[in-house]
Image 1 (cartoon, rainbow over the protein chains, first blue to last red):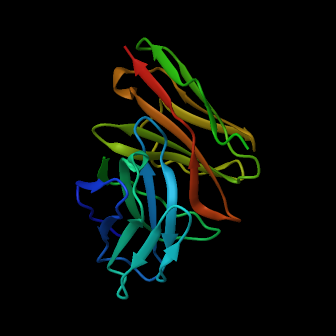
Image 2 (spheres, each protein chain N blue to C red; image 1 turned 30 degrees about the horizontal axis):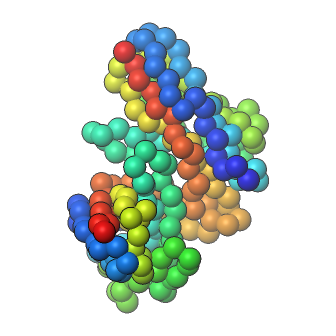
Amino acid sequence: DAKTTQPPSMDCAEGRAANLPCNHSTISGNEYVYWYRQIHSQGPQYIIHGLKNNETNEMASLIITEDRKSSTLILPHATLRDTAVYYCIASNAGGTSYGKLTFGQGTILTVHP
Amino acid sequence: DAGVIQSPRHEVTEMGQEVTLRCKPISGHDYLFWYRQTMMRGLELLIYFNNNVPIDDSGMPEDRFSAKMPNASFSTLKIQPSEPRDSAVYFCASSSAGTGANVLTFGAGSRLTVL
């Protein structure tokens, strides 16, 4: 799996958009980008994933650059409950097949009032 | 669905004792994963099953660890004998090939403390 690089921490004001970057410059053509988050003392939670097109669901939007070397997770209106560690993962399988998900150190997002 | 259910939520034991952690995956999910999380090493995949069959156990730290999945609705992770360095939070997760094998639903975790 391609290595991903994320900033160790970020701050965001409540109600504002949180934009979390991820670099995956060595990503291969069949690797998907997955985002998970882990709120304190809970298990990780799946957020969103994509291959090359931008994706949106009820939780967030995922913007992948055209060269696929980086991506941005966008939480459009951050709340205090979005304070968590956010993990960006590149995995060489998607759909019906499982590829190992390697959780790095992630980005600690702190949403403040 | 109640989600992935793990038990016990907390376990405190003494070195040398056997520890058994349990997991009930989401009904209909055909993948099951065991992860371990520590401050030093973060989240590590220990083993995963597909249709109750162990597929990759390369993350299992040593022979003291074993995992079984006797049926689609139950899995155990056993540590025998336990050591203080096994202290961690152990997460079970499940997923479905139909909706995305990499879209994992995690349980709340079992926090293990070995004294």
